Image (tube, rainbow, N blue to C red; front, side, top):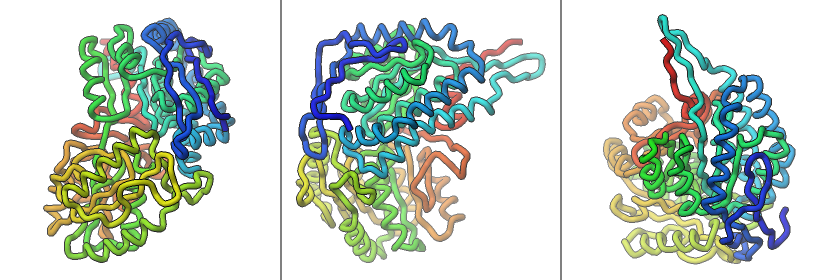
Length: 477
């Protein structure tokens, strides 16, 4: 684990860790305690331009590499991250406050992203004969990745892996709240001996370096994961230079419990889905839509199950909920909890303030019942451990409530009748719908497309769908 008061003052540009030119700094905090643990030197527009220039120079040669050559690079990246798994895990626990079991899983997803992209690339037909013509799938160019704090490693690797597989070069702007984690990842990139300029990483704010990257004339694509509000800004900034934009944005995902569900299984699963990543997950099923006639037994199970969730010791493999990433996010969650109380929802568990015995940025896991669709807590993404329970009298009403949102990232259904659940799933406006399940993106060992509808995003990640986001068809006839 990193020692206290680390100073991160480097960007990763042209294959080397170099001191950032910018002069502004930001403190880094341990969210479990609220204590400062370091400082990051923020990149400025000149740093961003340096990174793009390095990526541009590298693109000419890298875009012409063979599948075998790119596969070897992806393999080395996988090994470099895998080799430092323990250090990566402990740094994320310190800087982000993620419990160890979840952190290990997300770190392995980061290294695994390179192998998944390698497999997709090796099974992909980059040239196709159609009649007398040939369609050649060509790399777009320089791909910018702008990533959030809530799964730093897997977001960064999940974007650059398919980009590299496609033959693109990259510039990454991760969350400045994740600078300690990003530093180790950059060391892994350097150790993997990636060709100079193929991966470039700069720490900086969205307002400063994010704006430069989204408007830079040499950038061909921006892949952004974050809030819908910022996603709209990214689209506007990218429009003048006609960049391709891939967006994975916010969500207010519905979780429909059908009357035939095994409540003793469905309700604990619903809480796991809602409190996934301490509630700091865009796909989290934070609207639980249940039959009105069985609300009371559902309330009983909810209350019993919430009290069983472990908080606090992030090194305990049974701990499920950690702190919010920052004081700002903690305060945001508190405002939403207060708005739920003020608007007349009934507090079943949790509420304002910290959990007993915990300080830092921990919020109390909170469940509201008797929530109506017009309440703020039912409409807006909270990004914290807050679940809203709404009721329905018919399945048609359940679908209407599920679709009464500007979002469309994920949805969940619990039912003993899978065929009925699949029929209902076709009526829900969401990019990913899980039946009696909590994990999106794979079916067995096969990747499935990941992404949203409506204001939850544009484009898809994972497998061949993720690879094609970084390719452009060229017709030769």
